[in-house]
Amino acid sequence: VVPHLTRVVREPVRIGGFDLVEGQRVAPSPWLAHHHPAWWPDPDRFDPARFERPPAPHTWFPFGLGARVCVGRPFVMLQMRVVLGTLLRVLPARLAEGWAPRPVRRLVLVVPDRGVPMERVSAP
Image 1 (tube, rainbow, N blue to C red):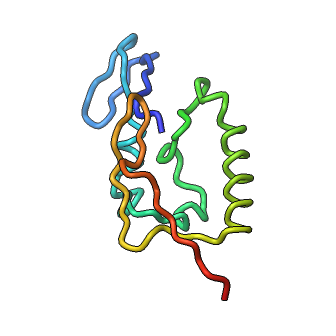
Image 2: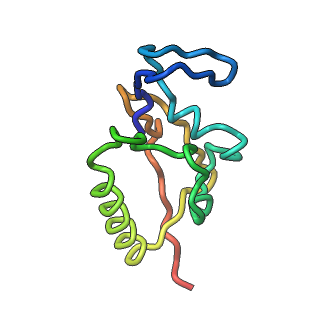
């Protein structure tokens, strides 16, 4: 996730009690939006089920929004589905017992500080 986006205000607007003027630079924070408790309960918990339904508009934007959305988004989403689907089909796995992610910033990315340890799940 790239935590820094910048935009320029096109017309005066009031957001959250703040008056923004035309030409002013703003920096919406994906990290803050993705950790807002009203939209994402327990945001640091690994919970793929939270994405079974589409999120509310403007609450999940890891690739940005609008005209400047990342051009690599469709490729990355397809690549993730293929790789994860293939891996989980041949090697069922889950997060290691007792592991909890601690996200840290590395340059412009937010990554887990200790990797993502997995455990193999035995077939029933």
